[in-house]
Length: 309
Length: 172
Image 1 (cartoon, each protein chain N blue to C red):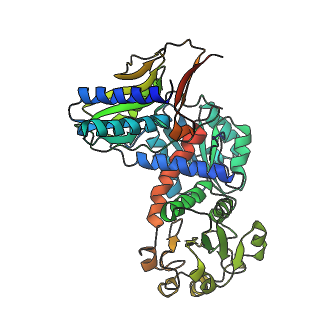
Image 2: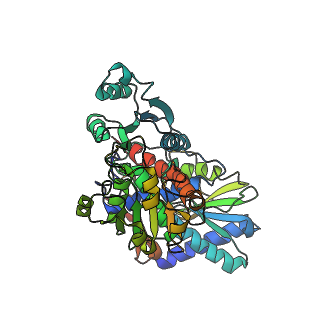
Image 3: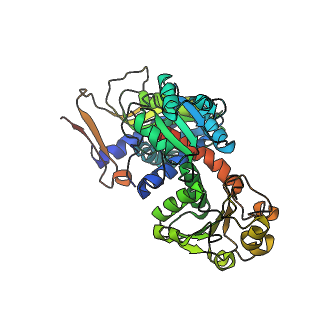
């Protein structure tokens, strides 16, 4: 792997090559090491200004980006939907141009519309990092999931990963699918047919509607959060029925291989997509994902923010 | 320099390090990737052979401590740094292939300080080509090669470049 990093933006994993994804994962190793030093801060982005622009609510992703920026010595401003002038009718483009007029160097954007980060990236000199756009992509979540699997299993190629739950509305699922396939994993999507339509097979993944068939054959299960706030009745069978058919209960977890990793992007709905005991069990790497997320975001900010524009 | 000259230079540096540091056990040879890491490994092997005492090695990647962030069109991969801690009573010897402006060494000292406060920091290089832009001077030098600014020093090491050891001056 001898590629060099040349991108100012990170919009999705779909447009990255396998080499570029591996490049970010290797860079992450270096930034993970920084977290073990006596002084956990490096001057890499000293003098740069990062704007955390979250039009949709998020605590963990925003906090993770904020801490990553602090560790890189950047200055951080947080803007949320309620504190921005978007509520006064300002367009996304005008808000962004105002941010640029303040000499923001990096904009981390969470937005309910797919494509919003692309829209900004095309118009601004600043680096744009997609922190989740609608049901499109959440690339840093995809990267931290890949990093966690690689860290625990030593590789990604050849592993069988099941992504379970609300795939249709999930940007996390999309970023995971693109990244996993590019690095040579085999992917099976599991959930009710309304949320996991066969259409997905066109991407090169397998689709199953029976969780019991899949669990014994996988090396990793990635459970997605049931997004109450996005669910519409016609898609969703109801919580009780979902748990009965697709929840990773204590009993179902016994079907897993002993070394199968259990992942979840959080926040967890305990007792819905996963039982408490399983979430806190030995196979769970859910908290590793959080720790790795910080290192992945440091790497992404360093790479995109450190490029001459 | 051919392979023999490189070997003699590194062996001499090993002798000098032992002479200046009577307790090699407290020395850490911290190489700057990628050739500095290999040079540190070789010097450590010579020290073990000569002094019959163990010496630690480490890796110090300076990419995230450089002073030219935001001026490059492409970025090379950053390697994880690795130093034995605590550093408090140790001597850290920074090891690199070529010493030029001194900016890399400044970044390396900055990186080392984020691991702790070593008793002292020294500098060993295979080649010193001059043209310093900072007040930095090496403690151990394999060879002084005065150069013009337009010239380049080429270094090859078997382990990192898959070519026989060699150092030469290239004029454009």
